[in-house]
Image 1 (cartoon, rainbow, N blue to C red):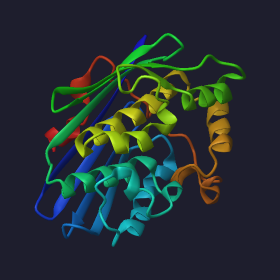
Image 2: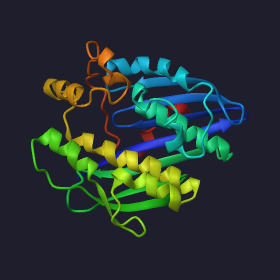
Image 3: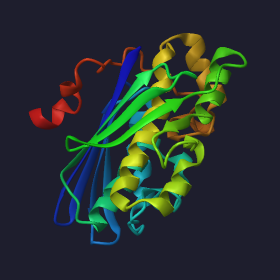
Length: 259
């Protein structure tokens, strides 16, 4: 069994905040200025991307300028069309906003998820600044059809087996429930780990294969900035962009330290 890692770092000062993420497939960041309650400017950084058109996605972030920050990241991403944005930069902006409103800066989330997750429960964890906050056993429904379409269906059915009070909760509907159950600090951690569990499924797919890229462009049409119909003709796989941080967690977001 392999290990997928995802690191998210939020750092800020008065009037400005940055959020960065890196995993095997992506390296994105956003720099956001604010007046304490509203986005005044935002700049995206697409440093390592799975598709060539992802590099154009920072331009779309201008649609977020003037929006109110939200204490709940899920509320922020409902203020404009999330599918017209890069999923990862949009979520970074949402997470940054929730931290601004709590004056909670200099935070690093470290998600660790085994792959492949199957019907036999696997352990997924989330640390914040080195402290273990979430420790889930997650299972995935068995395959029932052709590999790729079946995998997408199975990921949607991911379920937390333990511990309480998460036991029996499907990740597809987890956030609505979590909002009523947890503090904003724990909600943000759940927000990060839930995304990591879903993305980890891509580790068992050869994303560089020509037929895989073609299939994804068809199946996920309209899902995010790169998969919008107007980009279909020019969207190409960035072959060789997938890395493996399974046994080198220290390399995640290394460029921030080097910069």
